[in-house]
Length: 256
Length: 162
Image (tube, rainbow over all chains, first blue to last red; front, top):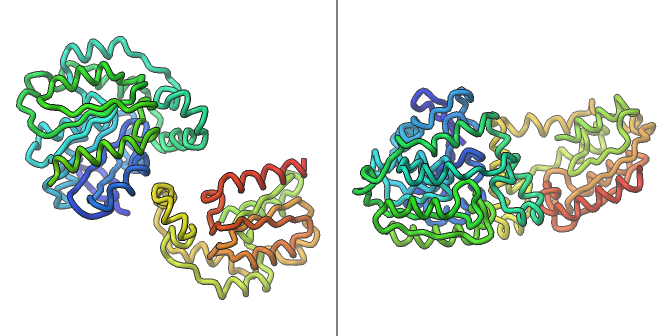
């Protein structure tokens, strides 16, 4: 599976399946490996593109200097290289920065946007204020998975942690501050947003709790919004069956 | 491939190893009976088809993909570079193994395509203080396909050889 020199980065990606394109944008505690429970479910009917963000996984970049502002243009360059002119973008956590920025900059290229366990970096004051009161635990699995999952699924919990350890180590604060930045897209920037959008959030998400995500969803016209039971910040990982079902039904409604 | 590490290390530093588990590997034993038997083995090229049973691939698509993706973390290389290490007559000999006293457990999947169960059984015969466990309906990655059975065998082996 290939690397491609893109935007001055040796960017790693994998492409599987056939049909309309789905692009999966991973979160800060993962990389392309975190979608292993989604891909086989969607490759039958869709072309699935996974990649490692700049500075994550195998897309090696300066780990000290994270460049989330370049994520959307990195994705644009990758899609251009692959000659993909339309895709749905499925984002978890930090991947939401990529997906929302990309959708605002290149709306004609996006068939649908899914923001899972993420605000997408929305800068609206009310959202940023709500996040100021949120402080999840420091431990990499305790902040992302429910206590029940950690107790009952030790092997999958370890896998979650080990996927994260493939990334260079970095301070959590550099990622979490991006979501507490009022210069992110606000009400005005979002008022004309007409790409079909779905929010998914784990009912026990400690990083982006459902009340925050619900507030974000209100900034959009006609959003789809689902709370995923018995899951925290990694609902795609803890509850792949429910996650995939919502994703499948949303995509089949907006991609004809 | 880890068996190369384990068996060579145990032969070189026997005092530092109290137990050795060789799962789905000959450990690189160089006795002609093993090397010749392996010469006739040719497993499929596809990375999952050669390591997992067809049943697992069919019923566990996510885990199959995970297996493949873990492999893709490694740089791409020719398979032959690894498989030739196991077909090398310079590997540990039958004579060397006669005095090898480390308690050793061989584990093999009964559907293993890379190291067939009968070849691992020959290895077991060459290693004096060894046991053999065959995992049913498992191929080359039986730790991955049948972790519970695999873990049970390892646990009971370690308990017997405390």
